[in-house]
Amino acid sequence: MRRLLCASLLTTLLALPAQAKDELVIGITQFPSNFNPAIESMLAKSYILAFAQRPITAYDASWQLVCMLCETLPTIENGMAKVETLPDGKNGVAVTYVLKADARWGDGKPVTAEDVAFSWEVGRHPQSGVAGGELFRRISRIDIKDGRTFTLHIDRLTFDYNAINDLRVLPAHIERSRFLGAPAEYRNRTAYDQDTTNAGLYNGPYRITQVVQGSHVVLEPNTHWAGKKPFFRRIVVKAVENTASLEANLLSGGVDMIAGELGLPLDQSIAFEKRNGSRYSVITRPSLAFEHIDLNLDSPVLKDGRVRRALLHALDRDAMTRQLFDGRQEVAHSVVPPLDWVHAFDVSAAGFDPAKAASLLDEAGWTLGGGSLRANAKGEKLSLELVTTAGNRSRELVAQVMQSQWRKAGIDVRIRTEPPRILFGETTTKRKFPHMAMFAWYSAPENVPRSTLHSSMIPRADNSWAGQNYSGYASPAMDRLIDAIEVELDKPKRKALWRELQALYAADLPALPLYFKADSYILPKGLTGVEPTGHQDPSPYGVENWRWE
Image (cartoon, rainbow, N blue to C red):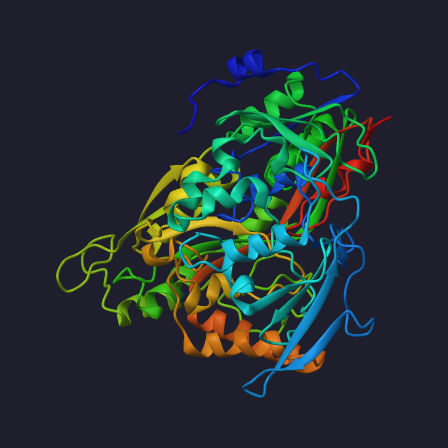
């Protein structure tokens, strides 16, 4: 639950010696709901674990797929990936990876192919609660050649066949006993939450040595890390969920920097730069982050596509991004960011059109009658709830602007805010929001939205709330497009399919697209090496290069 401490008290209790040149205190706006890298998908967790864990593959700051735990990225061209014919006559692929010889867990034990096989076993179990379970289900078997070499047999040949970023490696020597016998209880038994400071859970340059729930996480060097030696003897990631308090912490010395991935919203960072640009470096970059409103399509009101489209037509998103964000966050009309090569610029946009919104609502049976709010034939008011993250000044302001614009259309919207740990750990994951939830998705380059739009990815109690299709969107046409995009190797043909997907998304509106975010990193002048990525693989994957100068 959210700690209701004022900014000055937090600073007094948690301020660390920010001027020590071998120490770094980082401010972010969320605290993780858990620390298991495979369970649930929350950016705060991904950011913190990026200091302490390395995936097998990831995208770098240049948006290129690279090996992190493996020696060589397998490709069909170098012979480490081979197309194989499946019993049904379709094409699968066998992809061989070799783990780095010096990869070690923080307790000194090597990272092995057995760890990979165990992680697959966890990921493919229907009750484990793993967020990205689709990859694990596609792997039909794993052949282990030796302690470092393994081959994944995947049941289809996709354009990104060698990107196994979602296969987060778990230490079998610690986690196996917690998983076996009670897979459905694994999310509550994992050592990542019950024994978070266990060094053996981490294989990156740092390891977690202290966790104060809702407050901060301390990381110290992993003595068994064989890569480039990290500069800092101690990194503290401090969660301050109120963005005004986070800014105050920076100015008072409570934190040294604010992470762009989970920092100040753009409007606040623009104002900060104008006032403090001589003291700090403010790096603002467009990203693949998609700010949107998930709609609970189980709601009788929101099942009606006319109501969903009316909600979007009633919003002046161009004015919002112009006035609130200096025009630096582009209005979204589909799920694919304009920075991505498959973005379709010609998909029809549902722009601000109050008359169209009114006509659609009338057609759907929500009329004004004699009052200011619309009602149906039963006299029920058109009243909806919007939930979003507490403490994010920009989101709260956007929510209030939208509330006012919807009110003009005769729609009553109540705003509710929750701490991110609750919103992402319970409310969205278990689809507990009655109508609308506003947040952002971070994606990888050309990221197929299977987990958020495919009907098989709707979280339910019987699948331990796995999947991220929080809207409950079930469209056979969308399912077919997602399936087709993944296996289309011809880039022009794949781009055409992507256009169809974006057009269908804009027509169906399983969510209301708002804008594509820009990230602002606020760094002290002496800190070097921090490189924004603009996608879901965060900047701490390059922490070895961070330095005080």
